[in-house]
Image (cartoon, rainbow, N blue to C red):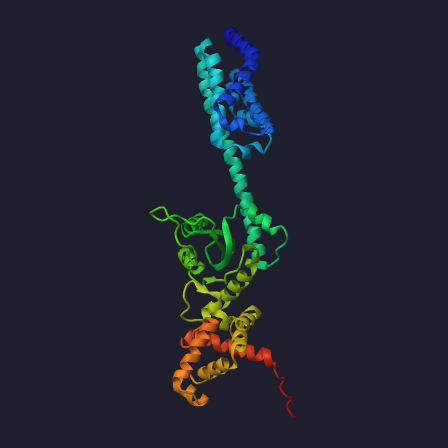
Length: 399
């Protein structure tokens, strides 16, 4: 090291404290966010600035020590500092430090001016690397936490910590939720799924388990704007699922029923999983298909939730409303959905049968005149009758 550089280094060490004081003063004057920080955070930011000045002196002595800059500058700050100031604010901090050092040091020699330029470039890249590593670690943690939440929803083994885990993921869904289950390749474009969901006014949690892809849906609290800047009308979950269908592979795609909130989404997940298992048995099933449209197949496969849904949503409301409606529906379905045959069996006019069937539709929401809905209703009547009267045990065969 030549004598001139030794003198410059000695001079830099003597003015390091002065530079640190000037830097803190300029931070307060030029960066509003610095003055608004709590005292402890402000002290940590000031410590980073002071360390940056000390690091410059060390770097000027040995420019080959560039890889050490990031650890020198940022290791003095607590870990939460990286979460409290953004990368943009960190670069503003670096700019202020470099500006103070340049104003005071650069006029002394051209070598120092060039050193400041090189150092500021290196430390800016180092800061970007620190934030990139922090973002990568955060992304891996979020992915593990999201997988844990989705698994809890699928298994129904939720605990008191589930709401806090959901909040930690930054869930923007508001109120109702539903679960969409289908198949996908091993490498699914999760980012594209999230973008499509946002455009549809929904937030999603995504879980990939082998070839099974699970997407938990919730409507965003702030719906997207239309071309005129007005809020768009919220889409139904089935419409949202249709927009996301392109992110799934070919095969069954089943949407569970809507539940009141995300914590209760396990019920929607159970129905969707049961629907996926039997969806191929409905030859012309739409894609996506609602799990409740697969109630007959699910009940035949032994799904207790499907049987309870058939009884609670169809059989019991009709029984409670009128035995006349229940009897008319039984006769109508037993007679192959023939109005005339039903009217003859009940000794009423066909228009009376029409009126009662319309009333059935008003009470339960299903229309018995459609072939698919007739199958659902007949399954409900059978399940309800079995539950009400029990299953008779067959008499033993005589030897």
